[in-house]
Each structure stands twice: as C-alpha cells, then as structure tokens.
Length: 456
Image 1 (tube, rainbow, N blue to C red):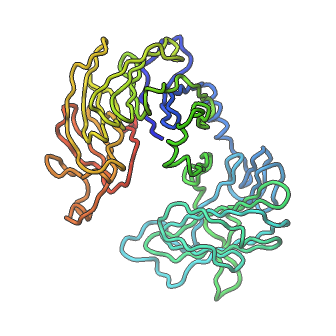
Image 2 (image 1 turned 90 degrees about the vertical axis):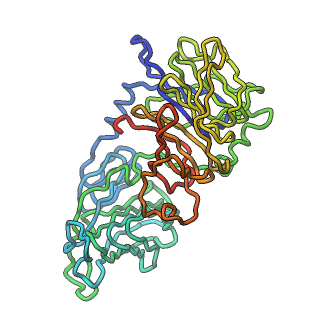
Image 3 (image 1 turned 60 degrees about the vertical axis):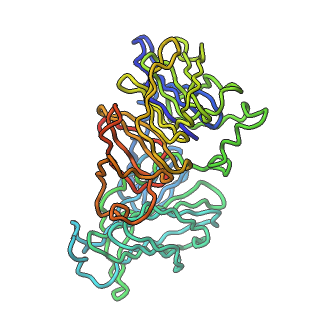
C-alpha cells in the first residue's frame, strides 16, 4: 500500500471538523478522514484513567495484586504499583545489588547471574499463552516450570513468545536469569493466557517477584522495582497488526477483476475519526501511488504507469468536481510534495527527481530534472517531504548511493564508507533548486514513507 498525505489548507473557521485526505493504493480510491477534536480529547482522558492495586482489567473491574484479567473476574495476589485501566502494566525489575548508573569500563563486580522467581496458580487448563520479555544490560534466560522458553540478548526489542506448551494447570514457576554486562541489569515481562473457561488472565513483572540464590535457598530477597515500563514501549494501547498474505506484497491483486470496487480495504481509525470514500479510480486512470495538495486545495495524484491527475474537490471536500490528466515522462512517482512554489516528484521508474509547475489552465509551465539516481526499481526512489526550507527524499537499497557532489553526514566508520561493497537505503536532503545534496541517514533496507515532525 502506498500512502501519502500532506495537510489541507486551513478551512473557514465555521468548519468544525479538521479534514485530511489519504490515498489507498490498495483500492485506488481517495478516502476522507474527519476528526472530532472533542471525541479525541475524551478518548485521551479515557486512556489516562488509572486503577490502583498494581493491575487492572479490560471491562472495568479493578484488581488487587500483581496479575490482572481482561474481563470482570479478579485475580488474587499482593498489591503492587499502579496500572492503566484495562491493561496490566509490567515494571522494570532489577537485583538489589545492581548499580544504578551505566558502567562503561567494566561489568558489575559479580561472577554469577541474578535469578528472579515468581510462583502463581492457574486453576484451569490453558488454551493459549503468550509471554513478552525485554532485558537491558544483561542477556536474559527465561524458564517456565523448569523448561527453557527463550534466551534474549541484551538491548533487543521487545520479544513476544508462545508459551502455551510450558504453562500448566495448577502451580507454576517462572524464573528469569540475568547475566550482567556493563551497566545496570533489569528486565520486564508479561504473561497472558486464556483458560478453558472465563476471562483472559495476565501476570506481569512487579514487586511480587523475588531474587533467589541457589547457594542460599532462604531467605528470599525482594526484587528492586525500577518503575513501570512506558505504555508505548510495551505496545499497550497499540493496535495489533495482523496481515494476510494477500495484504502484503500481493495486495495489488485485490484491485483486479470486475468486483474490485466491492473489495475495499478494512480501515482502522483512532477514536473520533471516521473514513468515507470520496472517489474511486476510473478504468482509464490507472493505479494511484502518491498524492499531494496544492495551495488551492486541489489534490494531485501520481499514476503507477506515468503522468499525473489533478482533482478539484467541492467546497465540503466530499466529492470530486473535475479531473485533469497530465501525460508527462514521470513514471511511477512514489513521492509528491508541494513546496516553494513547485511540485516536486520522485519518479521511481524514471530514476529522477523532478520539479514542475502546473498552471490553473491545466498546462505544464515548467518541468526540470534535478538529479538522476541509477540502480534498480524495486526498493526504489520513494517518498518526499519538506522541512525548514529543504526537501527530504528517501530511497531503498535498490538505488545506488550517490558518491559525487554530495556531502555524506553519516558515520565514517560504517563499512560502506570505508569502501566495502554493499547496497543501502538512505535519506537525502537538498535545497529547492536541487543543489547542496546531503546524505543524512543510511543503512536502511526499503524505507517507503517519510514525514517531518513539527518539532524537528
């Protein structure tokens, strides 16, 4: 799917909805997205509700203890910390003797690992179970009921692991072993399971865990609670992405056939937004790739084969009143952006970045080639963006990295900068006239979209 959008010019003050438009390549249609600021604010308040007791449930019932359920039933346990309503929030746990600052010259003075343990009961049989684990400054090994589930290297992203086969009805024991490296070792985890009957249950890392020493079975030492993991790092509140095979590289096939218009994509929106179809592509308009709005609020769309379309919307931005076609040697423009009085186009199959001006009468006033980029087309010349008076262009690793008339701002220690062969996707920055080219990031595979945050 190719998506590209830029802000619509400010509407009259009488309008109560802020409108944005996005193109879905999947079904070749313009889609309007309307946001209700009041609903969005209410949703933000709901997301910020806090439940005390260390855990919460999806369904509104508060839970005391270190575990939580999604539903109405509670799980007994010892109170610990706080959680966002509807979701159990894991905490970072550290050993009592761990340093609190990063040591850059040597690991902690310890020659044996830290072992964290948690016992709990599962009164019913288990249908499915999933464990999430993250570790910092230590490789982490996790055992459930004495069986090795996984070993995670330090600094890896959040790992999601199937745990159905190791969890059992009745008493269960989880052990997480940390082998410290330089810095303060810590881990966080969550375990969610669906019993044979009743609501889904969850256990998280919190103050109910303890440290054990194989050489000293008792007394147990409490684990040090370093605080909750930020929701965004644990995926709390994030929509899960599950794609079928034909929704990935083969999604273009859904546009084929007489009933293609009826097989429109299923779109997910945040609370307060709604999606409406503004216009579908006509048979002679090809497949749509990228889009941008000009200063008059007209939408310019690139065709996959070649050329552009310009559409004028009605005053309510609810329908298209006219369509203009421009047949020009711009093939598969994956990036379009209006800036500095020009329309900039990253034409992948033409292997060139262009800028042009289209008059109100529909004529192309100027068309300039700014720079060509040799190489393949698959992971190619992709999106464009405008930031602080300069343009950004993102390319995949099929495109040769320019070596002439370009300033490379990336690390000189990277293998390709030291002369080793290799292909990398990269981010370019250049001025509106197509000069002062800079490589500001590299080492990518196939970055497709790009956006510039208002704060830089």
